[in-house]
Amino acid sequence: MNRGIVIIPTYNERGNIAGVIDRVLALDAPLDILVVDDSSPDGTADLVREKQTEHPEHLHLLERKTKDGLGTAYIAGFRWCLAREYSEIFEMDADLSHNPNDLPRLHEPCLKGIADMSVGSRYTSGGRVKNWPLGRILISYFASLYVRAVLWIAVRDTTAGFVCYKREVLEAIDLDRIEFVGYAFQIEMKYAAIRHGFRISEVPITFIDRQVGTSKMNMGIFKEAFFGVLKMRFRKRQP
Image (tube, rainbow, N blue to C red):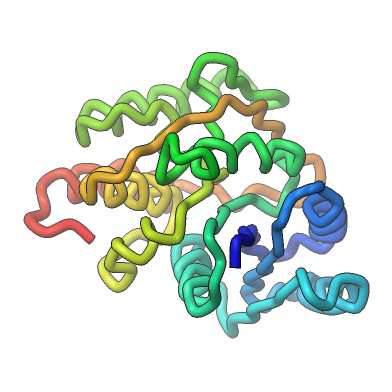
């Protein structure tokens, strides 16, 4: 199947998910969607099931019993997709901070053979952030500088969650050894891809802060990322 699939993890995203689904599936691109929902109490999964009646062949739902973190949601999604014949597998947030219209541009480096993994980047030339306070932008930007310095990698937006993988990348990475579940998961996946010799391309995007719902960021996630980077650098065996 020469078709891609967009994994969208959700927890209490009822206010956003229908709009994201409609916009992705309206694109003139061979893309399906897999929503991975962690038993959202707001009924996100129920709304996805309603949307499946409109898109029975291209919208899929994977429900998990507990909220176990972003990383485990994506890994569950990766396994579901790899059991099927998708050529590219995307990561995308549910809150419209990632513009669905950017998916074809994100796909292009992998489609043309320029890269094995492409990253929608806020911090490469042409990328930017809207509606974030200056303090949050500075924390995010200097966090990426910290990651690049510790891990010696050339990716500018190391915590980016708007990503396209060729399936060969996810097949090569030992998903059982991916350790982190918050934003450190995004760093770990990029680092693992580089360690396996895969090429990463950054595509400039405009990241727009969510308008509906609440952010999942907390101090525990930040600490995991800060100390997790050091652990990645010095552990003997990588995923």
